Length: 177
View 1 (cartoon, rainbow, N blue to C red):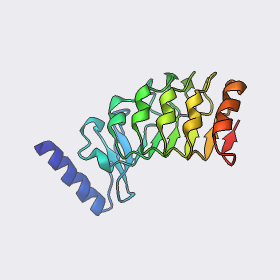
View 2 (view 1 turned 180 degrees about the vertical axis):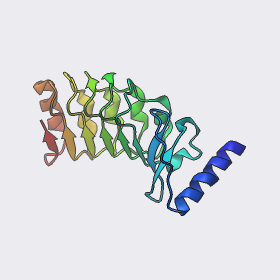
View 3 (view 1 turned 90 degrees about the horizontal axis):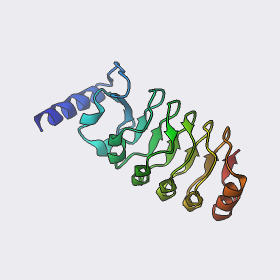
């Protein structure tokens, strides 16, 4: 507990002073926005003192093969960027736990599918799945009633899947094919 308190005090002092950490080791570091919308770099992602204050998480360009498990414990996360990695298969089903997520960028990976649990992200407004190897889209994407932009360009998705999803979504959604 003492270490968490020290980390929190240190990060708070840096934020108040307008400073940020600059060392960026791969995977173990996070670029986050705190409640004051200031960028903070946390060197050891496993020891984030107050995960409820993280609203934006940038894990792009880190050669990830899957999303680290600690991400799914970030209750107030609104933006998640896992673009330009080496994600394969589909995102983990735990993605559905991120109920406050508004923007999910999983572009430029090697994913072949999308889990049905993405349909549980009721606050999602932007879903970028461009430039992957996606061949099928889950019908549950039609549950995303707040979705404004769906980018599926650069994939070989099923047009039949997309037609079924479009029937359930609002007509003014911007689908980038």
